[in-house]
Picture (cartoon, helix red, strand yellow):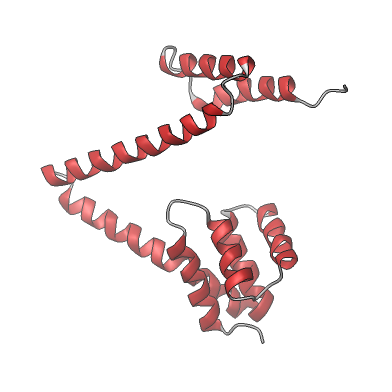
Length: 177
């Protein structure tokens, strides 16, 4: 039996609650396919492929796809509300809190802590990725050049990616043995 409008709303709300910090596709698959068994894995992958073809955030598109798959326009709106309501409300609340408290020292310290934690998570991921490339001189050279370009020469990210990306792809492109 297909999910009701309320089930679509609460299912997408569960996806939104489960995936703070990323991993929406994985959580969405886990909830929709494994926990609730609304779709088969193949149906989910098909939906995710369709969602990625359209402009906009993949999981917003995926929620609309799931909702419309089962309940048409009403289901799409219910799933969309479910995936957006909580994150939107939290961000609006945080925005209001910042608006009224941005001059306080406590808010300054709180944001400094959040920034520090974010930097730590980014560094942690960088070190995990770097370990896989310790014996790849070209990868280390590309990383070092990118680091120097951004920190010393203040090259912006987009131009750097537009130059370094094609160079890296050309170097690592599969070659005939």
